[in-house]
Length: 206
Image 1 (cartoon, rainbow, N blue to C red):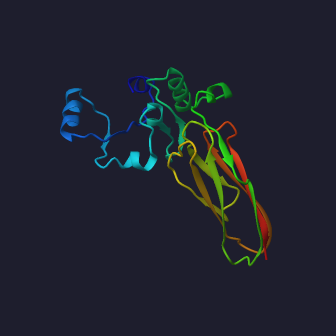
Image 2: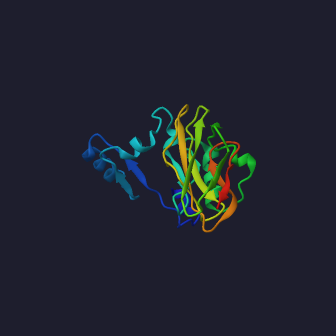
Image 3: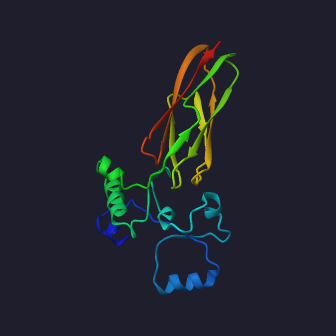
């Protein structure tokens, strides 16, 4: 934090989540250490329950987010100098090359299908479909961001970490603005080598 401050990166904010068994002991420690950064005391451990952080790997307890809370990188910059270097590059707006990307914790993903045909339907009726991503690696999967090729397509998905062997579902909704044949893409950014993953929905809105 001192290094970031010394580089004049005033726009960077740090937020710490604690789930102490004894709140009073934590507050005493923070006061004695003159800790001046913002904290959140998560009394019910909700952040961990939502994300299922692996207790054995502290790398997955630290995230670099952008202003929209999109995950840009994962890893502990204190324990891993390469992650620290990556964080600083991203924060300073430097171009992140493939050799830098390799420092990000990655996993593998299996997709049951990458394209779905919605067939023929009344253009006034909303259509729904799903894509399933299964974490086939040995590290947690993070769906960082999802883009669609037009405003007529929306995607709802969980922001939780997906543990190895588990799956996450992308719920896709298509609402035609007028009768048309369509071929729309959904771009999924996540911590896998093949990211971004491009999915497709097609059909005839009549």
